[in-house]
Image (cartoon, rainbow, N blue to C red):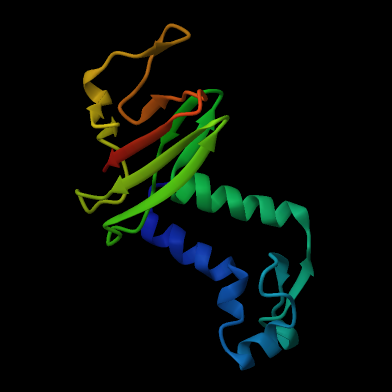
Length: 160
């Protein structure tokens, strides 16, 4: 949320359970499932051990942090807003998103190397920054598109 993509992904990796179980030694220390978010990682004598797994609050916040705040996929009603905050050295990434009966193949390209602030979005080769699209008397911004659930397949390119 502060705009530090490198730091955000570093912290994301720190809480990702698979990062605590890459080797046999790490897995023995962690002692919990490597595919479940632990609500606690202990310190002191038990340093590195996970606890309170299968705790639904922690998994939903992990999802929220990764999808919304790092990859930047934010949906409100039928408006897709792209607000990525990725590491500066990521050149691009893609997301396949289903909205009702439609599929959105989203590619985010980090041309600027700054990892944030979408300059424009292109939908099916149409530059949306040159279009005036309104929803509820509000003009959509350069990082927003109006979603259509009609069963189509759409190609979206967000350029940072």
